[in-house]
Image (cartoon, rainbow, N blue to C red; front, side):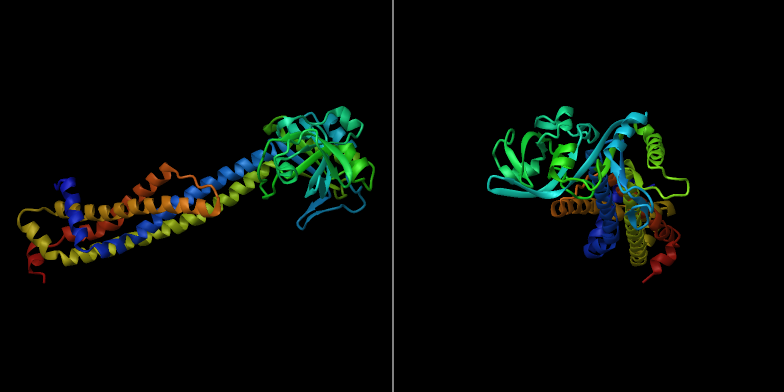
Length: 409
């Protein structure tokens, strides 16, 4: 039996005879392996980014919004009340055992002024429960108290983007900003959260007490109206139960009959991660199919070039058999050549894939996480391609008759 190390040396020598042909033969393997590595790197980065964005919203989170959910979006149910109210939020907190925190929200995008600077941002009126619901911590300062909520105090907690654009390097605590010409004192600055899953800057926001927004700043067309209610379930396993309890409570409070359309929608925000992951899985599968096709094409190229090599080296095969080489030796030699060819393509493909993932990350700022396991699997798969597609040419070479091979011109 031929020594594997000697077989590799002979294979490398055979490949050096026609370097350009060997490189072109490896191209399919290079593209396939590179595509696998880039695909896995981008997919892993996307999963991490989506996961961190979902986590930045808050865990075990449920959102209740006014309007019935339809295929065309949210709209109001016919004959139903128009809005959710603060009283609805209080009822959810009191009567739903699976719920931990409840935070009603009322707000809009408006102009904010500090000195001679102004900035357009989202101003949201809410309660102190909003911050634990969103799992949002204070960078410095504090959040408003329940007492400040009750008396509709003109205090504000701001995001870092607002501070940067309104105040620059000025220390913000205690400073007065004007929202629609109403003065507010800054009492706290939030830690940075970055972008939301929709790409919005979560730090570009100001939070004030709910009653302040409803009665001193924006006003409401209906008493106690809110735009949404954020709810945090006590545990992730209790999210379905919390949804059921909220739906039953609001259906009862709004006097909605069995055949009537609901005037509210309950959304489980943790499902966003599952939906995003499912879409990412589909994309990954499609890219994987493309990579697999490239590897198969590369394998066919290897088979083709090995058949050509067998034809070109027929006399060499005859000489080896004449001096004592067995069919198994010939089979092993050509099989080793096919594997070496595919493995070299795999190694080059790994380098191209890592470089491609880095370039993609640099250009798009999309995270790309290189997986050593994926790289190893891609390399092993390229070797398997070499074995699979190289076997037939190697077998054909091993079955040549020595005398006929020596006579071949």
